[in-house]
Image 1 (cartoon, rainbow, N blue to C red):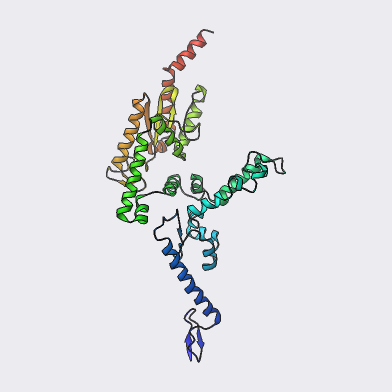
Image 2: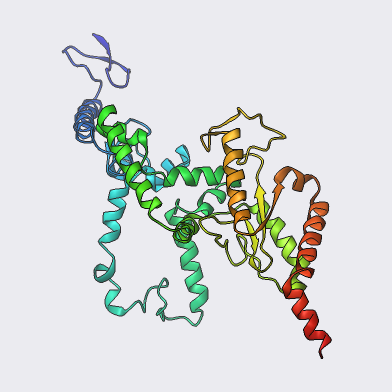
Length: 368
């Protein structure tokens, strides 16, 4: 009697009630049933847990687990690297945050196998001496290897090195750093209790911020500032080059880092001249020449008019503290680079020549 195998579909002859064409198919179907039971058991276990923090989900079959590497290898015959490539993801899609933290803690401090050597054999340690005269070169290679191989997706370079544009990379980084949201609270606790937990956390956070001085808020914002616009930085570096003979201290992304004025970090600042430039990207600041006031920016989750209002308050904050504030739009800079550079070089020179710095320097030269 001819039959079709219930697993592979192959036709086979059988005089019994056999459902499978071979012992291999019979064993495989048994494994599949076991895996399905295991999956249901695990998914029930993680029902009220927080995704990413306490578990991750297999993008192929939906299994929930703290770690997916064994599951991928045994069930899908796939390596971690193949999974990263197929789904354009990283290790945080295979291991939950708690799992990674626990594994990291297991080899920290006294638990580190190299601890007793005081770091002499680790290229990440300042005390590294292991068998080479090229210590600094070895340290840099080790550091770059850790970045390349471990996939540190809490740094902007992780996304830019994978082909994302600066703005896309900033959004990806923001999403990665978002670990506590209204949606996650509702997912974990249900809608009523989840909203309550989220609101309590928001109120507590707001009370904490309200208790701090502007200077303390400024330091908090400075620590949160992990990236800056490359286009803006290019503009500020050109300004610095044109004005380097004035020996002014300029603060911006790649030069001295961004500085604080009260609770805010201006994009470009010369404290000696009370001079600030805000560089506004077309997309993130909703350029009014491009976007209508009712345009909704999905990335920042704000309407254009809300973004303009926020930027105006920020600029007024600087002005109230005695700073001259100028705004450069990405559009105008991109279309007239040389003209815009010359404009601000002239402005800063005029500000410098009317300042006490220039007057005092002129007096000193005259008295010689």
